Image (cartoon, rainbow, N blue to C red; front, side):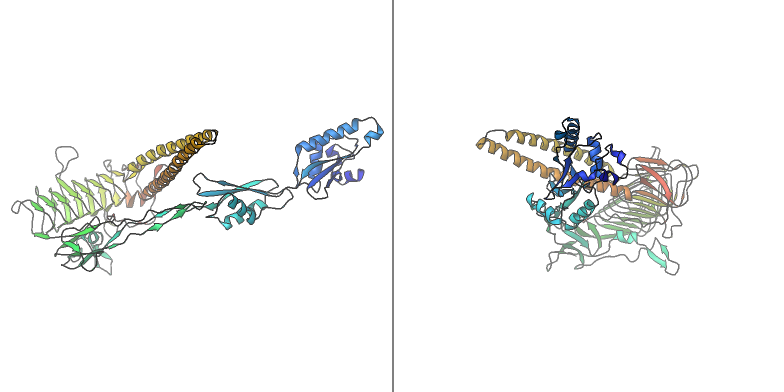
Length: 585
């Protein structure tokens, strides 16, 4: 026995003078590690035996701590026996065993994912792909199985010590993709596109004249103005158990046939003009406005109320009112007037007003369903349904739009925003923001953020309620299973199962909407920003989605953005083009 001790690096480490790793040997079938119980002089306990086993060839077998404790006890009992014949007795105990790798499968509550947990073997065979697939099949998991995910899991488990576990998703269902509703595409240019794309005056110097919007685009009877694309059916989904998830098909959105248009006799998916005029996009359709041409809107001409579009070659004078169902184009100035426009408003020169006696009130008021564009504006209250574009200066105005605000010429060399109260939905771009010793410039980017927060709060409550109700149903189901087998038990089980299925589907839909609301929130915060192409003065107040910042000093080219729960000012490396807020059709 002393030879076995000399094979150890330090026999005294084990506290047994004649006990060594060769006391352990393998059973004839190779499944068990046996320990010979023979008389030894030194004290033997479970720790000594465990250390010896780790220095043997059987260190990777699954050890039984209880067996080691029992073996140590047997060694001590053998040592204490007084009879030489009894002391020379020999016995054998099983202290470890070979164990193949194991795999278990867990199915998520919504049956959309399956997770495999693999245990590394104790000197046995590792789990292979076929075993994992067999376990999945036994759990009725038949769809969305990823061989790559299984293989990667097994490769990682192979590097683990015996008995270690690792889990991974190895099967994933696919959510249904709902179909798209009918899509509409306009086939002619409207005034809004022309506002957003001034004509190049000098191509060699890339100079743009904001006053030159090109030839007025009109249509004549028979011109195609919009087409409709059919709805798409959607793509069904599935659970990993094979249950189908139906897709909601797209809906055929009916035409909104505006004045001056009709469906083509040859193609019901095509809308054509029935009269000459100015095309204007409306929701799910187009209309063609008759055009009223006026030289000046002044006291001599009188106020204007017209259902179509209005083109004014001169000015809109002080105190005059215009109400038009279509778009309005003014070649000159709008001075202390009130204009209500059902389409877009283009003022080729400027919008001028003056302060009234009431604080924050101005003599010039603009209410526009579409986009607004002017070379400059001051002391005006402008409310637009789409983007607002000002070519050079926006001074002491109130602006409200769900779209973007741009104060800049094409070269980004001019464009001052000073002393304004701005509320927009997307972004603000200006060349110069604020002024020396100015503290009255306030910019708020609100958009749909308040509605998203409110909906998120509602969904949080709904999800918590659904999860709690499902838990109560599971408890009730467990109690029902304790009832005697019979019709009453079956009926209750069926009712509970049907209610639970409905609630699980409802919970899945709530969680899906929760994810969408969070994605919409992140998308809003990513595009909500204030861009300054040249100079940001101290004292400018900015609020984005409830987060506030006041510029404490002057900054060169920069942008104000939301980052990790606060607004920051950072250098602006490139000035992006403002995103037009076209109507969704």
